[in-house]
Amino acid sequence: MKGTLPSYFQDNWGSINSASASSILEGAYLNDASVKTKTDQIFREQLEQEEHPITLIQEEVNKMAIGGGTATALDALAGYLRYSEATARGDWQELREKIRATETRPGASFRAIFGFALSLGTISRRRVYHESIKYERERNAGWLNPLGYSVFTIGAAVEDSISMEWYWLLALKSQQQGIKKGVSIRTWRWRGYLVQYTTAGQEGPAVALVHGFGAFWEHYRDNIVAIANNGYRVYAITLLGFGRSEKPNIVYTELLWAELLKDFFVDVVGEPVHIVGNSFGGYLVSLVARLWPALVKSLVLCNTGGTAVQNYSAVKYLKPNPNSAVSQLGARFLLFYLKAMAKRMLKKFYPTNPERADEWLLGEILRASYDPNTVAVLESIVDLKLSLPINYLLDSYNKKVLLIQGNKDPLFQSKRTASFLKQQCNTVVLEDVNAGHCPHDEIPNEVNSIINGWIKQIEVCEAAEGTSAETIFI
Image (cartoon, rainbow, N blue to C red):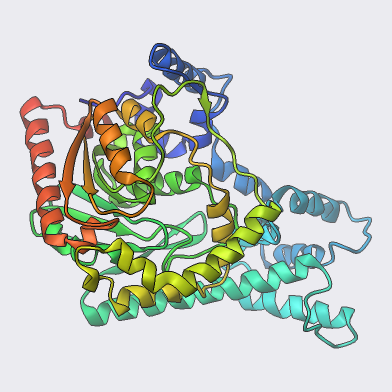
């Protein structure tokens, strides 16, 4: 069965790529089963009417970004650094309005305004650092204050230029390490940010693997090749803010990550895909399937995150509340806790085969915790609502979903959630396995066999029915 989409989306990939998650959910309430069809119809009507245009995220970003050549960019940088000084220049007044509009969290305005120029090479990261430090010295009689910068815009420019250089070097190093190991490690630039992924397999249907909280594409270390060897093209991605992908100083939401995955499937994979998601990644791929069902051939959820709500009624997407004192304190406590307890927590997640929670896995998790802007990511994690019930997402997807459930998972009462989803969602097929929170990594051979069998069954059914999702893009 095909995913139901407004006719606008069925024209081409570009249409799907243009539709933001927020534009689909804007102002919509998720009602109970008796009125859910009406609610979804409202979604479609809002998108199809010309007076309700689709929000184009990149266009909004471009309105804030600095254009022009190097001289223009340097002049804007001078105005940005001198935010606290009085000025009569109209262009600098306009720049200050942009700063106030894009300062969604401390220091976020710099990347929002100068990210485009930096990506194009109009101005270099090192030039930004040089100009920022030079101006700071001028303000302090040649000295740098060890306690911080005199203006928040100076600190934002310095910290972001250092952060961008760090992740660029990390991406190069990762690719070099991949070459030595015979692994294809690639970097995809999404909205100016560096996102790491890997591929395996040369032909066959596409399969995407999405990790959970605190993990990375390597968490599928013993799944990628095993699935590819069964005749599939496998893509494993490290989400923005995790692993060796960039951790920009922005506000992270489930809709942001969903749009990242949507764009990845359109721009990199280039066709509808079978998606496997673990934990938090399971919730994200379910959200993608709800918002852009034509991109998803089938879903496989391994101990999925998210909450299930019985007889859900009048549930609305809750926007985050960035920069709250609770999220700031919570993020710092969470970072301290994760560093101190990571080894013990990993062992709990792997109750059947604790040896799989090895030093390499622990080392990669701890390494990422020291990356620039890790606290910014955790602040958003602390503030995440995940307000859309997982059973609503699956009901709306309206295709068969395989739920692989490790029955020894210590988190989230996931066994109870899995049983509930099986009872409440007619589309869910439950596969119970003897494992913890990460069955794909704890018992990879068994899970690989289940996934390969599932995808083969879906492909055979599609071929027999002649209803492959690919046909809607012709």
